[in-house]
Image 1 (cartoon, helix red, strand yellow):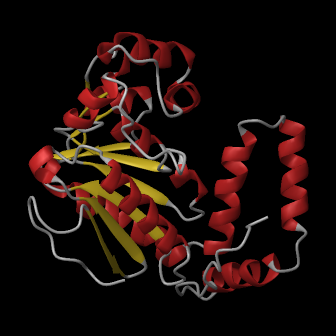
Image 2: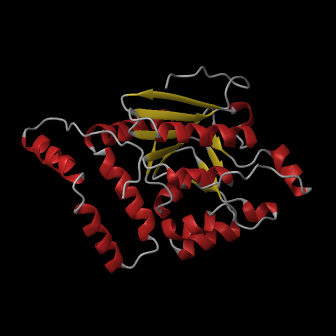
Image 3: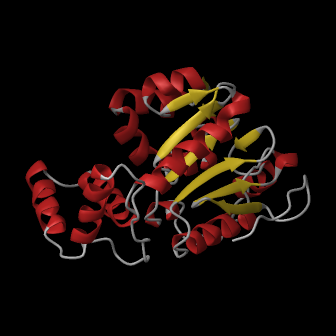
Length: 271
């Protein structure tokens, strides 16, 4: 997939480029701080679907153009929704990104709230710029916690912290988000995309795409399994014949001190 031209207030509302096995997906409404709307939702999820099916792509970085990541639903759409007008087409769940069986890294470069926070949570790893700010925001708009936010937050930051963030809807800075476990790493703002991309490229270069797909499925499914069931699933997966070639290559590349040559993920069920 080729790079698409950026431009404030013009062009695609989601940009995508691929380099070295890493796709960079950019929410591109900088004149609105990348506020979410129906067009962005459709374009973003369709882009993820295309990347999920592209063997060349082994990891995905998601960020925002300009000063914001995504501060939530566009205020015009939010005002309409408060009057009963639908703000989205609801043809796909807001947790659509969970179905992408490739590592997704959020590079949170600025304001991140509401729907924007949910999309960051749906990524597997989160890097935040030191200048980033985050909020659940729902309660301060008279809303219940939407789009799976409670499900994510309780599992990621724990029960007490999830209730704090949801009930107060307060804004937290990147340092506190890291202390809570909401983000994995905080970096200087001007280094954010480079650091997130380097992390994603290391995964793309050195990790088996087939194993990564299965690991993602294991982690998310294990939220609902017992420990014994999790071990049973591991035994089932490791016994599958097609996993042996990646295992042999992983060991051989280590012993021979060379980069591994893993097969691409074909987009089929990793189980």
